[in-house]
Length: 288
Length: 320
Image: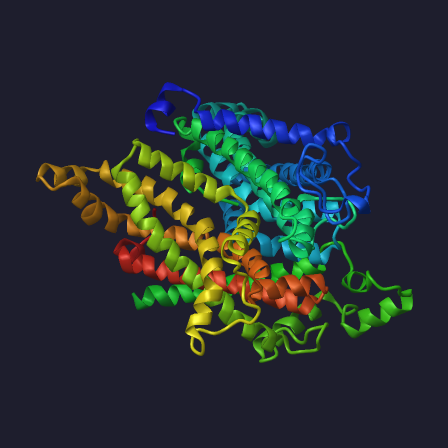
């Protein structure tokens, strides 16, 4: 997107495409029960490794299961896990970041140090530690991703809240003796919220990718229920050469989802750069 | 300068200690029973679980367990022994470390070599199609999951050249050719994931500098734009490149884990995944610690490089 497009408020084609792709995939996976032409778990040994065609849109895997149906069902699990982790990390990170910015002083310093420290943990390493500590299950994976995201969200929320916390209108409300909770929720968050939400969309892309990666590594959701990551694992291990569609088509859907969701988050974040409140957020440019 | 370095080293130690507490806390304080997790796949009785807890020292106070682990890291045992193989964790990690370190160093070098000229090109052609292509491509490359990129590449290499990753790893000293062959594609993948971060930030920084008064005065002296970019703006943007390299190192490590698994590189990333699958928690815990310390040290190196490039840093707070 170039400068003139941004200034005129013109919505670029890539953004529209991203929204359409994301909406299609997310609604498709959430409605997997209605849309999937086959049972994702039903095996049909007579129809093993059928190439993609009219009958099986994405072909079948080594057990004769329909890959398209499995992609829809697997996507539902991946997206629900990612959404709940981003929701949890968003709530925790926003609360900590806002409180830290508002309170300032020693609490703020402690929070900043803690965030710096936790950001030294590579995303996947932290998630891996948590998954090993709690045995693999959907809540464990969601928790692992959430814990890895919290420091990132906290940092963004803190800088967004910080730029608002010393605005005059906040000081006015403060001088009327309003409580800290009231000020943060009713006066700071409405102004600091949008960039945080935009950042969470970017995080959602990362969370979907992280869930797939953990499942691929065998540390995600336990079988037999399909998830994108495990479909990639099964497909690439057993018959990558003979039936690449089992791996590559779900992988393509996964990538389209992540790229489009991330692009939406980027765009939402960038649109508000001109409002001063968010400039700090835009400058960090930190990726989960 | 040496005082600055000393100060930075003094900062690493408490950070490393607190990080070790975090690693330990995640493994032990979170709900979940290590003994239960180890036995999860085998039929077992309550007594067996209790015996295992006793053997692993899990019944002792957490504080004692933590001190014992730290003691084992500081002494030459490094994290005790693997539950799976009984091998010393130190030996397990030592072999893997060089692979991951080489992979990361190659990937950082390749990323810088690729991304600096690309950023210059984008900045020179700002707003034109080439800039748009570079920006769009880097935005997509940045968000495509490394997992998919790696699998796609493996498949393409297999189809087009019949090439698959060598099963045996070769070190750079003994077999430079084989080493290059096994490292090339993993490095390409990591570069693909890492370089876009550098391009984004460096391009933005270059544009900032190009709008500054001193770039304007260079132009006013009749210096051609290309020389203004390369001679005036680029040295200034070097600081940004160094910062991103440090800041996004986590991306590189996470990517390295995936790539090592897919290409069968015997590095610490593949090691930690294997250990995690086997519930070999002494290895997981110590490998995680080693990776975190690696990040700490690279950030230390970044800070020193930073201070070398920008003298202001040595005396005050670091600013972007």
